[in-house]
Amino acid sequence: MPTSDSVTWAGESGTRIPAGERRTSVPEPVQSDPVPHGPGGTGGTGGTRGTGGRNAAVPVLRDGAEAVAVARRLAAHWAATAVHRDRHRVVPEREMREFGASGLAGMTVPAEYGGPGVSTRALADVIRALAAADPSLGQIPQNHFMGVDNLSWAPPAAKEFFYGELLRGARFGSAVSERNPGRYELRTSLTPAEGGYRVNGTKYYSTGALTADWVRVLALDPDGGTRLALVPRDAPGLHIDTDWSAFGQRVTYSGTTRLDDVFVPAGHVVPWVSDPARSQLSAAFAQIIHAAVEVGIAEGAIGELLALAREGRTPLVRRRPEHLAVLGAAHARVAAARSLVHRAAALVDHARALPEPQLPASQAAFIAVEEAKGRSYEASVAVTDEVVLLAGADGLDAALGLDRHWRNARTHTLHDPVRWKYHHAGDYHLNGRYPRGIERVGTAGPPVAGGR
Image 1 (cartoon, rainbow, N blue to C red):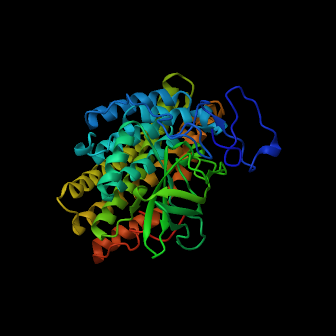
Image 2 (cartoon, rainbow, N blue to C red; image 1 turned 180 degrees about the vertical axis):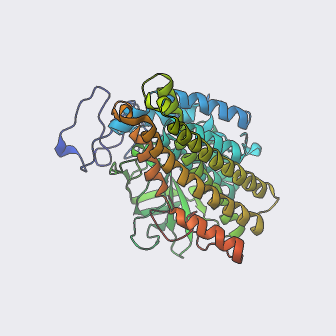
Image 3 (cartoon, rainbow, N blue to C red; image 1 turned 60 degrees about the horizontal axis):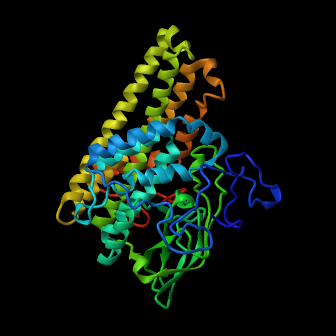
């Protein structure tokens, strides 16, 4: 279990921990299932390395179609407890273990390393399904799949080791971004040590790190080069706080990670890609997952409204013809956003299928993703607001939790500004200019809550 200096747990029994023992004013998290945490089964300050929550019998999925089918079954299971998780800020320990055990964690592992290597479109459809059930649980895997993508430029030995971990259900979390208001500046450092490096720094927006097996840490080496350190969740000196207090996406636990002289073996430090064609394609891959989350949020909100209306719990939708028009328009917006995500995914897959990354193909894929993100971000906020309107006063019952859809959409859309998506697309189409800076952390535009 994590140590008391990094995270406080309250068990399913509802036992409350004295206020003096908590680190922050954030409501204490409720653990979804009190089990050993992390690769070594001990969490926090280290322990014997082992398989922990990972299962050697995790299935290797055949293809994208099977991955989507598995995701839909998992989503149906998660949906039943989504309101409870949101209301009580439940740490999704059990749910993320289920994600790993389902085989989904390894679905983008390349075929040459024993995985199915599913397409970007299939991945987007998996994320949509998970996000429709619980957007926090749909966003957490974004950083995981970015970690898998990062391995594409890792040395062969690192690929062999980590791909094997992923096929056994291991999960990546993120400690990439830093909270430096007004500008992007990487301060976390890598210092050479015998057999590897020591990592020191503070991160924020650490989505998925709390429940991960491995944490991705972006840092600077002594020469000023950017490296990605893959740190076991139970490494001594790695502390992950529960200070995430956003009103939406509550159980992503995207808060603070502190690294105090954390040792990382040299073989677990991966060079950060510098080739523009490769880095821009990686950015497109990262961002299309966020677009899929937004489409999933809107799809989940509409689906929940329809179910309530058919049960007679929100009768206003049926009684007012003008509400049917609003519902029809909402469906159209979501369908348009979904189509743009599929179009962008096809361009990402085309660029990734080339023998070597080509800059024009990578740029075209990224701009298509920007367009899909702009439309999906707008659609999710508008549609989740309209769902509350269509439900009427009957839908305000807190037990229904309809407000969580808008809160989640609004929170996630602040990941990076919609206005920059359209600016980048317009500048590209008219002037042939491509946005600068995306190779840093997989985002474009000014630094805003970014790179996570």
